[in-house]
Image (tube, rainbow, N blue to C red; front, side, top):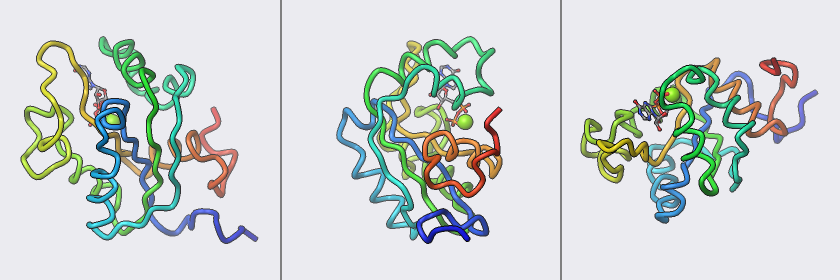
Length: 157
Ligand code: IDP
Ligand code: MG
């Protein structure tokens, strides 16, 4: 019988990160405000300095990309705020609140479009991460919030 504070596996969840640039610029509250104003519910929240090992697992799909090392350096350059958000179609919804990966292309009104900075010179600072699918969300929440998970074995590989 799951304890009441475990996530309900029947509901949709997303793992959101306020990245080191967002945290350092004091934008955590702004990101949370937009998520809550949209009606999503916060289920987990912590400040954490991500280790390269954690980031290796978090960004496993990008391991072979040319920007991988820059990405790990950026993401381990300072604390991040990790958040579990719950709601109907929250994965798509958070992605749409975030906007395009590249802040220059992100539409005004989105977090990255309003607040992100251009990375024309190789800068990768785009303030937020949000899971891109239910499978990624499950894997990522398991990494960042193992204490909230209902299936401890999943994605441990
Ligand atoms: P997403 O964060 O919008 O899901 P992904 O393609 O999954 O975008 O990339 C993960 C993160 O890697 C991005 O948010 C960004 O910080 C960084 N990144 C993605 N593409 C590039 C690139 O071409 N150059 C440098 N950094 C990149
Ligand atoms: Mg992604």
